[in-house]
Image: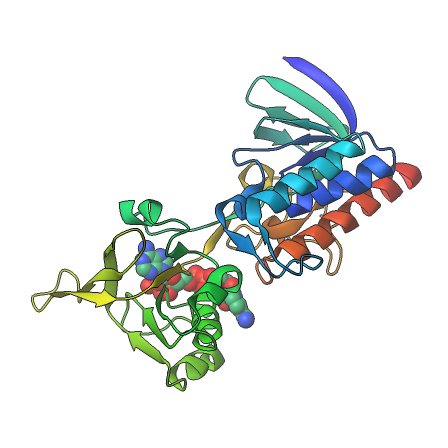
Length: 312
Ligand code: NDP
């Protein structure tokens, strides 16, 4: 197989990957960055980003990513299309296979492969993507001020998103498939004590409707039971909060991950347990998952890579 040796390999093209690339290029590490399945990452699926510092008027997600990409390119990052399909971190130089056809041997690797929000798998989620369907309340909640929204999920994320949205929207329905919440006690109490939030236990969302945007959700109560009920609920926004899946699969044999698959790093740093291999952004962050926190960890990873190459 075609093999190439690089000093610094960056995998992933979200805010973490591009920021790592900007710093690594400026430090003369000649980084090679593979953009992955979704160049630009999760932000390319959002509309306006209003919480990234430096843009008082906001900026569209795709534009922000294009700007970060250009900035990385300006300093000489070798940006390439391609997906990392296998990895061997058992010995130096580390080896990553791209598209099953080329091997990159790298002295340092920055894993910035991100995480993907889980969706229910409904056709309507695709149909209304960006026009009423979102998997990020912090990103999109602002557009639903004084409107009615629904959040799907019963874990901590769903409760947190519902509470956040309740500060903006006029009404929040929490659609929970079980007769109880899985979230921590404190989050449950916060949700149950909020008069703007109504929890719909034993409910499943099975479809959405609306002309040119979401106007409501098709619900099934006690699905599959003899007393099953089906009805429609008018809403303006539909938020998924049923978990995320970190894109860490090929690295799992070599790195420590939590039970969901998030890569574990030394607290406060992007260092993994393999020297010279760093994890930045959402693939190592179950907690914050923001563009700015991802960018910051990408910066840290590049600085770590530079120091590692200097000191061995
Ligand atoms: P969880 O896996 O904890 O919860 C997912 C929720 O989505 C569950 O209620 C689950 O239902 C529901 N769900 C999953 N699939 C479907 C489906 N197809 N249809 C309907 N409902 C579905 O994920 P979270 O993202 O909430 O949390 C991930 C981790 O991060 C947890 O460990 C959590 O504690 C932590 N976290 C902590 C926070 C904090 O401390 N502030 C904030 C956010 C997250 P069911 O219960 O039936 O399986």
